[in-house]
Image 1 (cartoon, one colour):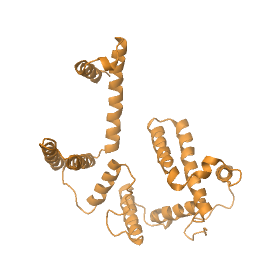
Image 2 (cartoon, rainbow, N blue to C red; image 1 turned 30 degrees about the vertical axis):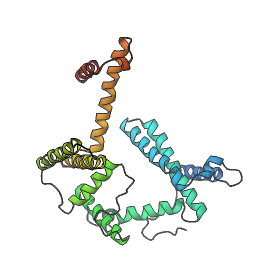
Image 3 (spheres, one colour; image 1 turned 135 degrees about the vertical axis):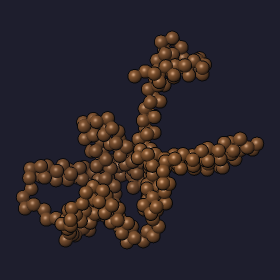
Image 4 (cartoon, rainbow, N blue to C red; image 1 turned 90 degrees about the vertical axis):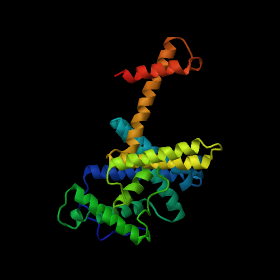
Length: 282
């Protein structure tokens, strides 16, 4: 399926021992997956899987990689990257059985893409600083999107991304052509406007759940924009708040346990007092 690309850097004439280890280990994984998918003697569960059925696992493994990085756990990171690699090999094996593409095609495609997006390295163009390389990367990706027939500036942003991530990508893409607020203060004004509109929908005599959902979505979208204008990743900001919530709620649980009580038997005022205590803890 795959033919060598003329743009691919020539491979070294002799492989190092590390290169051979990589080749051997990846081929071993490929052969394990082939055996698991063998129609006669394979694993019944693996044989039932499709691209769609293992897609959630692929996403889950990517998140577990991110968690290992966040925890600075190199042992876990190695393990989770292996799980993610398995997902790629699994998807490739399913495609290979259907005759659509294989692992070599996947590798060849990303090789071509990386070489195309780094002309300052592979075509010996004038070296650029990090900002220049980033701008060049985006320009090249825009040309790639045009070649695929994607005509809108917002085409090609995956619909399956988490909503906050997708909102951020949409906003960044629009900002490239100047469709953006000049300052965070104007975004704050928009948040106040959206808050008023949400309150009006909530306080109607007959609240419309769809309208409330729309207004809440508008507010969340603007909050993402505020984070972007402040150069803060909204996903990271929310993740930090989630961690704080867990720590502070754990304090409430500990206080209840120390008194031999169930949380269900403690009133909200007491829980709020413990919550305020937790906020003062280091």
